[in-house]
Image 1 (tube, chains in turn green, purple):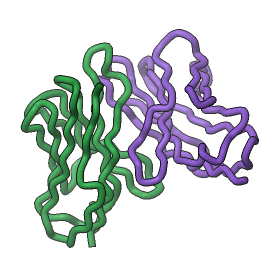
Image 2 (tube, helix red, strand yellow):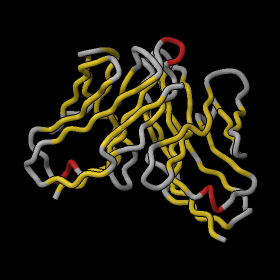
Image 3 (cartoon, each protein chain N blue to C red):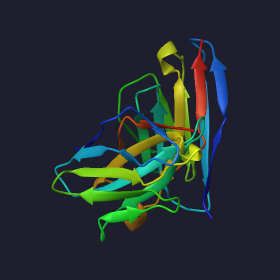
Image 4 (cartoon, rainbow over the protein chains, first blue to last red):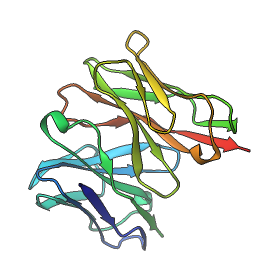
Length: 114
Length: 114
């Protein structure tokens, strides 16, 4: 069966520090991968999505970047965190072709920038 | 492009009462529709989805939603709620042939009181 792992679960970082959040998927190949951010009372905002290794699409301009160095690995990064980067970050995967519809989410990372 | 509006940010109800969480969408293409549930500090879990066929879809825990194309709605209902249904619920839409990207509503916080 397919599983998705996301870590760390919580993170407190000072303003200006770097960030690296990792997400890996098991039990499937060539998934579509997504990073979402959830701010309090503001729903889910799609940040990045990837349809293959090295293929990253950014949905909104921001202080973050994403990379996909391996088929089932998706990394969210920042060189210098801002206070506004605080939030709950969720990674998700979906199938491709006829299985592209509907996501499976990781358990999320609660990031607090202080 | 697609958009989703969840008309109620918070819905308080008493245990064993019926509930309806409203969701409206807009899209210039055919859509697939989803409801996700999020328990505190967890990722999102798929509750039910409409891809094709019967416009009434059901989940294993008693929720149902009906796709109404003329009213562009996909409201979520349950005839009798439990304390354990307390969570945040997200409606999401994906446009046909749009690569599977999900657009989420702002969420509805369902609070079930004894």
